[in-house]
Length: 291
Image 1 (tube, helix red, strand yellow):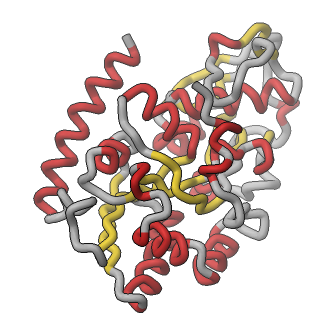
Image 2 (cartoon, helix red, strand yellow):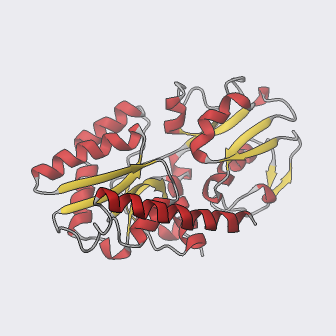
């Protein structure tokens, strides 16, 4: 029933965005648009505005125009790219893209990496995972691509047990085989994790969300992923398969992997920010896109 409800919401949301984009003059800006115009739909947060503002300046100097539509929705961007209404999106990691394609019939592929996105479990009440009491309430993302990340962190720390072979991209509470500390998990939309954090004993946060809450991403984490273990969760630019290696994609990648963008991420996240720009997600799909 939950998946059916999500699909109905997806269809409705996609229709609303199509109308909004038409009003902005951006609908239909994909394959049939100006060859020197790149259209993008991106997450409306500082971690996404900054790189695109810098990329737009470089692209403009090279004769390109970057048109960006910013949204707070994590459902609409894959639909409009898959439908050809927008060239590219910039809001998601690879694991979310994979599960969204599977569940919604979209066809979006990762074109290049932008920044690694290790996440963690944080608390406004406790400073160490061992302080989190039995029966504690822990907030985790409701979307399937992120649902298991907190569970795997807890399992790796010996706080609970998961089914043998459970893959992080598809793990859910159904895979818990032992919960000796009787943790209660509250599943919330990933965009509201920061609002939920003060009301729970601990909760999963993306790095950018921890920063928004004025937390030290590394030192304040009760548990935290390593980039090498979080390849499926690197933030990517998504597009249709026919954009792989296209002039637009190459120009955009060069602009979004420029020294200015590197400096932005180091300033925004810190020296720990993973920038896997010498790696190609197209060559790593078998590591994290599973049938």
